[in-house]
Length: 306
Ligand code: CP
Ligand code: NVA
Image (cartoon, rainbow, N blue to C red; front, side, top):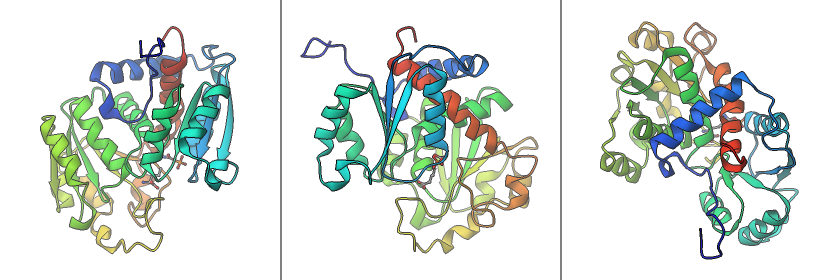
């Protein structure tokens, strides 16, 4: 109970906030919900989806998830909200808490997510910030394990930009106990504070400039776009070309290696078409699993029996 005598509010902000058992529970729930997709777990509940950045997968998967669980959504972009005209995040949190049962926010200002969670009296979900994308990682781990069994102890390779998705892969590596080999140019490495955190947690994170070394024997090779939504659209991404995932690179990974990408993809930039459309690729399973993983998150945050 908190000072007001209410049970503390659960949020889903970052993987590092949870212990392994909780994240494993969510994956088990996701697999169950995948087998039985329509269940009235959230009848009468409403989720507000706040988008300050574009989305295809996150928007549609959260909308469908709520509908299949018996609930509803209201979708707002920064053009619709007074937040876009200077209303504070704190006031937005207080007001939405009077109408809806949970809020998902996509923003490129992580402080807004933190502020929203600090002032909301209902659960807040991170739908992507410039610093992380935890819902994506729940779908990614679910996908890997559906195809290849437990990820614990496996070698996973990240190639390219040390962006929001890469940073959530680091947190996942710590919590799910796999080895993450990251190959990035010096100007695109994950932040040193995150490297320090991973080391302090006893994580198996290797950072190299050599993409072949990272991919060698890996059970999965993962990449993402060169220019994220929070980046300057004119960002000079030429240094990332050496980290493109090609068939030659996949040949260095394990014979049954998977290729993962959160999408949207840019064929010919971070990955060649023959890889993303080839035998290694599970990218559309990943996209589908956003739905199942997020249902588990919603049911756990809001449901009475999860
Ligand atoms: N992977 C992902 O979050 O996709 P969207 O930007 O389409 O939501
Ligand atoms: N790194 C990408 C992920 C998109 C889902 C971005 O932030 O634009």
